[in-house]
Length: 295
Image 1 (cartoon, one colour):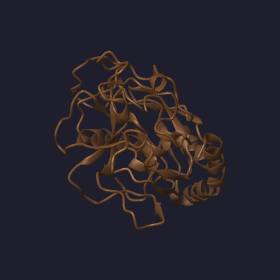
Image 2 (cartoon, one colour; image 1 turned 120 degrees about the vertical axis):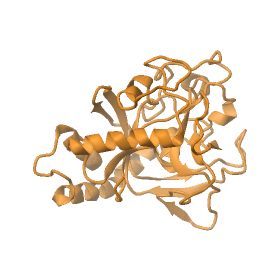
Image 3 (cartoon, rainbow, N blue to C red; image 1 turned 45 degrees about the vertical axis):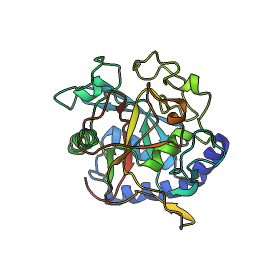
């Protein structure tokens, strides 16, 4: 699907988003009698947003955080058999995401991390550099703290949480409507082993993809919320896939500044180790997504 098709698909999916927005406003939203400006902005983009719409969240002590709207969509996840560098754990399959979500324009920076966390384990200090050497548990703890604070302050509609994106959400956002290995020309989009000089770079310096997202390919790899597992092959359409309840390791995506181009592909997958502090090439990106259960 190209970007035009992606936008059209997002428009068709607005009925789902609108129904969700109406349900939220009919008493499901916490503090619906007097929601904050941020809560109203979230509801507005859920109801009327189109692919790539920009929204600025204000995080306490961390400043503004630019987010992009990704509408509910149906797309082909995985890589084609002809794709150079593909691995066997990437079979193509049809995925339907029934709810749109917001995803950060860039990877989380060390400045943003330190606004909520006590220490910074990144081996390369720099407030505009992505935070790295963060375990999956630490990344999720950051999301939990941010969610709790923003709920207490009335900034989030009920059911919406800050979290890591699911693997399907991440790939949909990375592809931005493109079917190939990358969402554009790799050297313009990514810091990888061939052009990074062997070092991490400040976020947002590479070209954006069709949704306005930067560093989805390269710079640092990014944790997803899913446990790593093989894609099922016996279902025509996978609806809101979350993967197994538990597996041996969580998933990360996107490749980093030391990665070969093949590891930076939209469909490329990798498994981390739960509880182990990973290396300097692994960080994460925030998503604001709808989840019925509480965190």
